[in-house]
Image 1: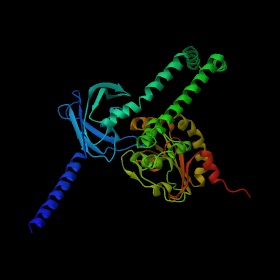
Image 2 (image 1 turned 90 degrees about the vertical axis):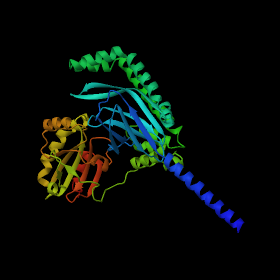
Image 3 (image 1 turned 135 degrees about the horizontal axis):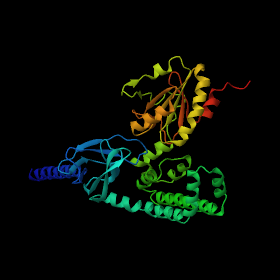
Image 4 (image 1 turned 90 degrees about the horizontal axis):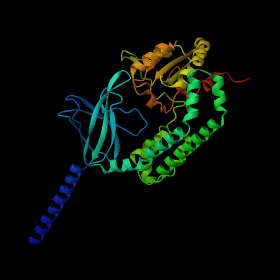
Length: 395
């Protein structure tokens, strides 16, 4: 009886120890991210936004500055990069690699006028408590070396570059052609080609040096602004662990996006300037096809393609073709100015509902051809490809 009681007590103690360990683990498995910037006014709203995803992510948390400090708490299954941003200010931000630990960020904040509005810049940042952030800085220090190489080859060719800039300002096309044919410009072109080869080789080397952990896919997202099919060869060299990590899954979804051809469009959520939803059915009523054109005010290829798109619309609108332009501009004022200047004869909206992400748009201009019922006929195509799709088959 006594022996049985001892066993029973022993099991109970063991259970308590296990439970206590689990409780301690659960309590420890979270992060506390504290920012301390004495220049930030009380009441300033700070946003926590996922980074490193090639998407226009929305804030996952918000907090308010009190006595120059703000705090975010949560947990992550593995280190994640986050953007800390002042709400309502596009350029007032910095990045921190967050892990489940007590992380403290300090620095200075200065106000600066940018594009007609006040923006705050974070300077002299110091992050304490995140080993992953320290490693992030070490791994991405490659950028500093590449920036030094960029400056060097421009400095070494500054004379021919200055002459070209002067000729462009004067709109002297004859002189521009002469300079472009000169030995000095050929040297610059060779130096530039060598630089971009170095960039490509260095970034690929950095990524593959980390192919066996989540760092590989993370660095792939961080170092490359967008992917092309050739990056699939890099992804396929990652370990199983790397591919199944959070960032591994993000890279895979980016490189191998789901095709919607033959299916209902991934989103038809258009929103007008009054923030009211616009029905796709009302736009497409009586139409055979609808072209969705993703563009932006700052995208020169997009703006240059507009005259041809207008010509296409003039020729085809009476044949049941409609166009919807969707701008991915970050600032509404930029879109309004460009939209007014272009005077589109079709529907035009700012992307307020995450359409670009839903359609997996990575580079613009990007066009999608839909039926009047909203089914995808062609995705990420050019105007010429759309014309081919709409052309009747040869007899």
